[in-house]
Structures are given as C-alpha cells and as structure tokens.
Picture: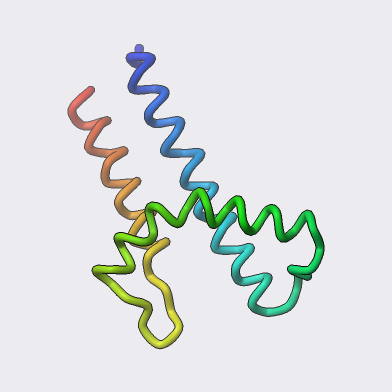
Length: 93
C-alpha cells in the first residue's frame, strides 16, 4: 500500500512527463511546418505547453545552453523527473 501523498507526487511526475513530451513534439511539428501556428487552437495549445514547461526549462538552459540548435533541456528535465521518482520509491519501499 502506497501513501496517498506519494501516489499524488508520482502521478504529477507522470503527467508532467507527458506534458514535456507533448511540448517537444508540438515544437517539432511547428518547426517543420506540419501544423499551422496561425490556427487559434494550435497557437493556444503551443502557448499553454510553453507556459507549463518554460519555468522548468529556463534554469536548465542557463546551465546547458542549446548547442547547434539542439535544446537538451527537455531531456535533462525528464532525467531529473525519473531520478526524483526512483529516489522517492527507494526511500518509501
């Protein structure tokens, strides 16, 4: 049986992981011209994803700037989330 607080934290980590994946995929689709940013729904979705992920990506980008157009901040954020997840599970179990 898992503590409800621990379950909530782990669920938030899972949801945020999917938000990061959605933000990365949407930025690729916009960059390659697959989806039109002039569409109001698409623009709202991209802005919302950026607003949710940018507070986490910004400090990472200060330490690891984009290299040759490749932004590693989503990867570092996903690694940090997984590390925290396993750290919590290690100390709870």
